[in-house]
Length: 303
Image (cartoon, rainbow, N blue to C red; front, side):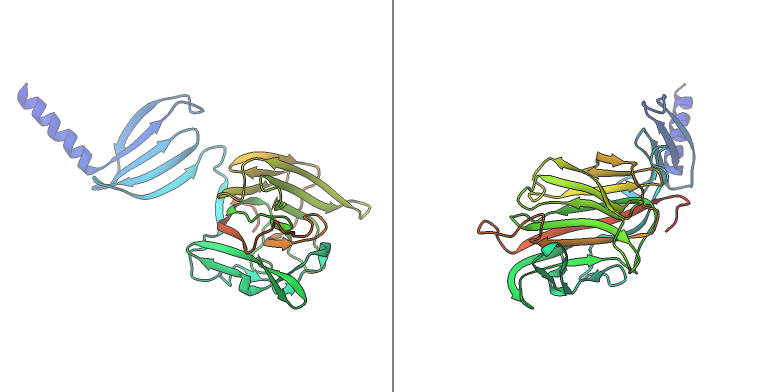
């Protein structure tokens, strides 16, 4: 009996070091909870965990976790990362973004967009707004876009950012068609009036059949978006546009759906018809800090 137990123990240890492929089915949408073990590559331990949120394949060693790859479950499996900027370089990627260099003329805004007001530092993009005279403007600010560098039709977009604040400060993350003769339709993923830093606006503009401007919009009041980092994003499909803040759906529309390639735009405007003019309570400089911008697309969708 002791000899048989010893042989069984040796066999178990051998299986462990030969490598196990472990499938764990958790309770939830899978309606099961059990483990199945099969042989994988020798000398490599791999765990495949399945639950209602995702399916993750992990290569394991006896001391640490290596090479984690995440696949999505039935709900999210179609989304694939196709483009991103983590802002981990020493300067802005010229292959991905163009810095603006002009005096904003629409909406009675007061800033001059200068390339010098766009920096990448310590893993963050920073759009800097200053009170300074430049080319007859009292303020300067920063703006970047991906026009003629990256555009896409349908997808999932997310930005993680800490927003600037103050009367007359107007940060925005939005999308426009990648053409030269018009700016509509426009998807505003995030707009915030600096004097209301706990309110984010989600907006869609387009021209109706009569050529008149139409808009659907909704605001979300939550935490102070200037006090810490938050995520702002959309899911854009042929059927609907849905807005997300901190991973939670806050607004959705099926009224009008853009059907052409669109590019990304990030900026901080100063003054204008909607935010109003800065006053004595507004402090400078102000920083629009971005941790990352990521774009996902469904399998088979157009880029």
